[in-house]
Image 1 (cartoon, protein in one colour):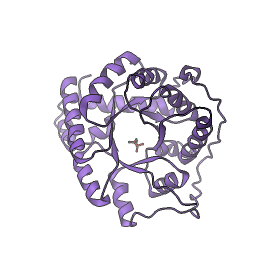
Image 2 (cartoon, protein in one colour):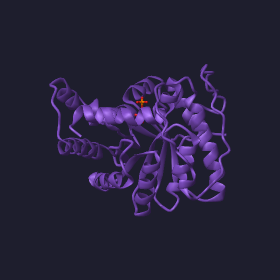
Image 3 (cartoon, helix red, strand yellow):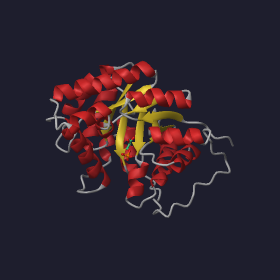
Image 4 (cartoon, protein in one colour):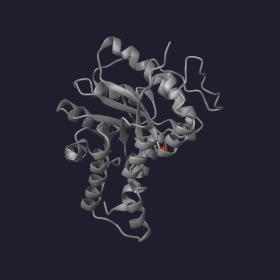
Length: 291
Ligand code: G3P
């Protein structure tokens, strides 16, 4: 059994890192961005240190410039994230998505995997859009993302966040494994074009284990790209065994397949990882602009 190399994306809001990662790795297949990563851009850090706030329009212009600069470096997919809090409606997210989709040739729109985000994704993909469903912390969100994108012939992504689950003492890699298993079962009943994109990668173990488990795409921060190059881009083989992490095991749930995404319920639970993740993106966006 040989292990297939997934597509390797860079997880960064800084086009300088795109250039450097390309130089280091020889090639990158795509890039993912989000509000927290854009807020880490050196120019954004300069605004912040001067206590300066952008208008919403200026922030979008700044984000667009970043995406266009990345687009001059790579031909592959670039993920751009909509602004969303718990009150954002699907139609507000869709409006943003339609604009952001024009920022490059190969854009995927990141929608939060909330009930409104899923509605937006379903509409958007029915009309030819491409999506990356983000902030995924459980199989129900992954199943709903599968169903929400079924009508489309484009390729989409679902992004389980490994490191954030680890932060709460739960093995995030188990979620990647469980989603891959669930999608294999679903694929027998229907044909979908949604790929598993392992995100929130913090260590080389996360990278190696995601590759070993069969993730279709892995998005890595620049620091992990540097560490991987030091290891001469080592690849796991069939003898690789993910190290015992001491984290809580996440059991596989044998969810039923529905082609109606609304059958999967995604509750709003105060302080769970989805709530925390959404609030963090909102806070990082609001640190930069008056929204
Ligand atoms: O790709 C998602 C990623 O940017 C989140 O990573 O380290 O903030 O959990 P992290």
